[in-house]
Image 1 (cartoon, rainbow, N blue to C red):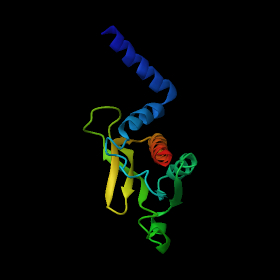
Image 2 (cartoon, helix red, strand yellow):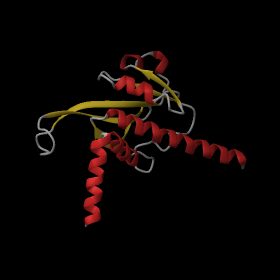
Image 3 (cartoon, rainbow, N blue to C red):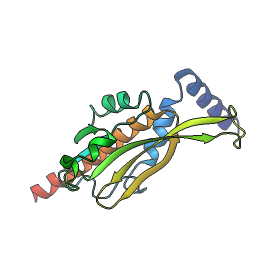
Image 4 (cartoon, rainbow, N blue to C red):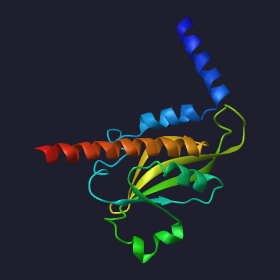
Length: 171
């Protein structure tokens, strides 16, 4: 019991001293996978360009630009209006969208932290061909931590796809 209490206290101290971003990122990483249904099973198959949809909340676009510099696949940052352009109508080349949804929710019922309305975000993939959203079920006001966790996991998924291709080429 003492070990559990020490672990809880240590976790709180780490969160308070370093911010909650690393903790949110770790929780999100644990929720993002093909097995958990948040990444499409065929995401790493075939050539496609991921459309990264810009938001209208301050800081989101900067975080998307910075995070997707690390993305190992093909991607383009686009606005909602640009998605309607003829150039992006091809749902094979531009099959998936990466989206950040920001919304407000009432915090009065939770009984934790401050009372009132809080802004939170959800990051997800949207399959334009099947009209299906792939969500991890993790929301946070720290959208940067969520975006980074998704980029990390998508890169790992792309690496798995590369390993499959190399293995079949060796056969």
